[in-house]
Each structure stands twice: as C-alpha cells, then as structure tokens.
Image (tube, rainbow, N blue to C red; front, side, top):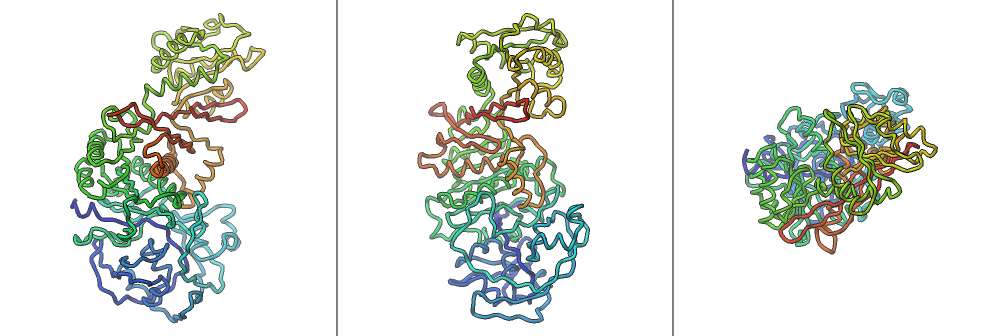
Length: 599
C-alpha cells in the first residue's frame, strides 16, 4: 500500500436528507478519485449551498449527500466532489424554478412506493420522504405489528412535497447525543463493508469546534488517490482557523476494511469508534477546536509504521492504540518522541506505563484493582466479618491472590477474618461453626461459574435459616457480570457485590437513551458484547475531549463518571505514565435493583 494512500482523508459528517430532485450533468473539470472519475469544484468566497445548487442544477440535499461537510456551511477554498458516472446518470429536470430569495421552494411528487433495503429504519425512510413516522405507519399498518422488513414494499403517502432550501445556522443544538436537524444514514445490520465505512489504508476525519456539529455516520465523500492532493480540502480547517490550540485525536485500530466480511472483533472496533464520534457530537460546543482522525492498522506493524510517518499523526494530542503488543510498543515510542499521549484501553495487561510517560493505561492494573477492591469491601461492609472459602484438591483457585490481599489488609486493620476449607462441594457442616447472630460476607477462591455452583446451594440454605436475611452476603468477581438465569437469581438472593472495571446497567435511563440514539444514528443496534463497545467508545470520547480541554492540563485528576466506565488517572511520578484508578463495586440486590458504587 502506498504512503500517499495512507494519508488520504475522508469526511465523516452529518447528512441532511431531503427530497431528491433530478439534476443535469455538471460542466466541471474532472479528477480521478478512488479509481473513479469525479467532477470537482473549488468554493469561492461568499458562495452558498443554495447558490451552487441553482448553478449546478442539483438540489441542496444532493450537494450535501456527495459532500457531507457542507451541511454546516461552505468555506472558501473547499473542494466539492461529484462522482461523474452517478451524476451523469441523473435525468434532466422537467422543470426547475429558482428565485433570489433564500426561502424559495420547488415542489415535486413523492414516489408511490419504497423498496426496503438492508439497514433502513422507519425513522430514516420517513425523513427521506419528509413525512411523519405516524403517516408512514398509517399508510402501512403492518409496520406497527410486524415491524420493518428487508425486501418489503411500503406505500408512501402522496401530497405536494416542498423542497427545503439551505440556510446556514449560526447556532447548534447542544442536547446530549441528539441533533434534531440531522438524520443519520442507515448502516448495515451486521457487517461493515468499504461502501459504508472508510476504505482500507485511509483515514476518516471529522471536526469539533465550538460552532460546528460532529456526527458519526458512514462516509460518502470519495477518497482522493491523486498523489498531488493529500487531503480533500473540505476536510481541513482553513489555515487561519487551525490555530495552535487545535486538538487532535487519532484512532488507530484494526478495522480490517479490506476484508469482504470483517470478523466480529473488527466490527466491535468500528462500534467503539462510532461511540467516540457520538461523544464528539455531544461535546461539539465544548472547548477548543478538535480534529478526530481514524486509521485502519489492518493488524499489521508495517501499516502502523506507515501511518506514523504521516506528519499530522505526530501533531496528535492523544492516540488511541490497538491491543497488539508490538504495535502498541511502536506507537508508545512514537508518542514519547513527539510529545503526545497514548490512550491504551484494549491491552489490559500492558505494563508500558511503568517506563513510558506517554502511556495512559485506561484499565486499572490487576495489582491496583485488587487493592482498591479490598479497600472497598472492607470500607463498605464494616459490619460484616469476611469469610474466605478455600476449596480442596481439584477446586478452582484463580482468585487466591485477591484472598491473600484481603487477609493481609484485614489483619493490618485489626478486622476479624475467618477461613473455611471444603472439598468438592461446600456442605452445611463446613460452615456450622458460624454464629447465627453474626453478619458474614463470603469470598470464594474463584470467579468461575463452576466454583460458584459448588458453594451457592449451602450459602442459600444458610441464609434462608437466618432470622435476619442481612446476616449473609456474597462477594464476587468481574466474571460474574456474565451470569444469567438461575445464577443471576442466586446472586441477587445473596445480595451479592462484585468489583469490576466496567458495568453497564441496561435498566438505567442513560443506557436506554444512548442505546436508542445509537440505533437511530446507525440503523442497527450495538453488538452483544461485554463491555458494550459503543458505550465504551462514548465514555472514552467524553473523558478525552473534556480532559484535553481541562485548564489544569492533560491528563489531569479530573474524574469522569460514565455510562459503563469511569476514568480517574493518576501517576506514580516522573518516568511513569498515567493509570486509571477508577473501579466499581456492583451490588445485585434481592429487589432486582443493581447499585453501582464508584471507588
């Protein structure tokens, strides 16, 4: 792959979907773009989308479709691109009227039917034809009972349809997640293809400024392969605006876009990136101008090296890196040499932060996690005596280090601690020494469901025979987040608390709102994964953008309480990187409520 292609850019911006009018071929010069011939036009001072629409015989919606960045207004020097074959194939209009007024409209008649494509939504289709969702459902009653189905034909309600004209807005709605004036194109249900995401070897870029909206959608702007043009001009801030305080976030992950069917992990990385851009949209009026760029590393160290040769990457404030140890090490060295930070959220076991000041370890390390969880347990449950359960030969003991630290800390604090051994399955006789009038919190030696099943029966029986159900509780591990069905019911019965780096409460309003907005933006729900990658990306983006704008410097001691993850970075001193110290205690109550406690 060529170095020039690695430096090519593509806009990711919101599309304003309106009525589609026919348009003539353009009388403009052409240039080879991504293997295709495209018309191009350089915007002159004081030109508007409306004026260009009249000049080219296109609608405002069509200009924005091919050049999404102009939805927020034109800038002199921008270059607009129009795929020649596609534009030439558009039929000439039967009529075209225009006036000098920005309020001028034309009318056309909607198609009578619509063939549902993969990834489309009721919301997106109603916006496409400028009709209310209720009207679309009323014309197609099966939508209410059976939902929208791929391949079905919808009846489109008929009436005269005004075509909106474009008027640049001087203000931006700042409601979290949502941008009422923007409709997001639908994404595919389960796969990511070059048609709906940046082509391999390229970078996606979008801007966050105090007066510019950022959105995460599939790109429609073609990618420039002409070696004399490294960046489509419309993706760049004018030189006068790109001041020294412009912030740059670079995302380098293996999106594997050259694959016809990217695997699940590649799709999860893409979902993470989309979450970042939703955060950017939520904070589009927050602080300094920002540039967000995304590169496909293709899981290759050679590709990583090529990307790092791009001068703009060296200007990054922060780089989000992949989990591959070799690639992460190379990026870390690069960041140290160029004075930027590396946000490592995927390589959980990396220890580069111990020797590289550029590193930001986004997951609290095992050692710190155990100490923080032990302190949280002893602090939150001061009225309970810890009971360590130790299995005999053949039992699972993957959490003995945690038990050792708990034992040492409790002894140092003068807390009583009890240790009970058992063979095979925990039996009532193993815990008969416990007092019925005391309060105990049981700590097993393993986070596996197998060992959980060996202790839970006797613990439930013990609690059922207590006069005060509060006399027995269970303390567990991050792996228990995955428990469902009877295992989860048993956790709730035991009023169980676990520690974890992340937790997504699906019943919370924040999760519900974000989940609905993600589906609205992309036309498909987030994938079933723990942690949920779209939310992980959103939390990371919210923290990073705020922290980069923090007057006390980046990274600072600012705490971010996220939907699924918290961030609170600290450092061990000179020569060390920064480490996220945040951890949760998650309490699964018998009532069905789940409480998340930030430590």
